[in-house]
Amino acid sequence: MPFQTAITSTLQGSSTALGFWLTLPSAAVAKTILHSQPPSPGRFSWVLVDAEHGLISDRHYYELFNAIASENVSPIVRVPSAEEWMIKRALDAGAHGVMTPMCHNEVEAAKIVQWTKYPPLGTRGYGPMFAPHAFPGVAPGEEYDEGSQTGTIVVVQIESKAGVENVEKIAAVEGVDVLFIGPFDLAKQMGVVRGGEEHEAAIQRILKAAHAAGKKAAIFCTDGKDSRVRAEQGFDMISVITDVAVFRAGMLSELRSVTEGR
Image (cartoon, rainbow, N blue to C red; front, side, top):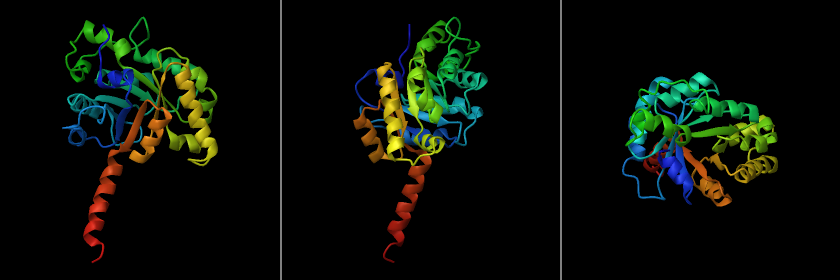
């Protein structure tokens, strides 16, 4: 029987699944942010553990995933690249979902799905000795094995010109759960101005393609104001901000409060 996680439960409901980007390899940072959150819907239901551009590697996965999951929040890991061994390492450490960067076409999307599922649905190698630890209430063995086939989510990033051109085909791939927009790379890869008309048109095309295929649409945002706009546009899953952005802004704000007017 498929099991429920914080992210799957939220995506099945009517509220937007809000998360944030964790770039520092610190379980203490994750738990400091997540501990004593307010009741739903004003809470984070997922954390993106960034092993692509963050300071996180697979040796940090186990502690991070367990720390996040202990707060009834889903750890989603962005692996450095869409490679089978990287996806396997993330899932075996207890990820509730995997995000892969730079998905350019439906062939790549199908391979990603295949690598996240055990046979007969895919080709994931078997060895989840530690994965169930990040799924409170889920027993090792059959319960995890069967539940993870559909209970762990597959997120592919659309952040290139080719990805946009093929987005309808990517969205149609069975097993892809979420199309996630990386707006910074999308602008650079398309050679357009971030926030300009061409950029926004591409974002809206991805949003429309995801929903037309019955999939969820997600996007990276820079702050709460940006996130509110995207939520009003109908995005199902939103990264509100990054850990380092909050630390930097908070520290500098407090510094200014001391030094201004002196």
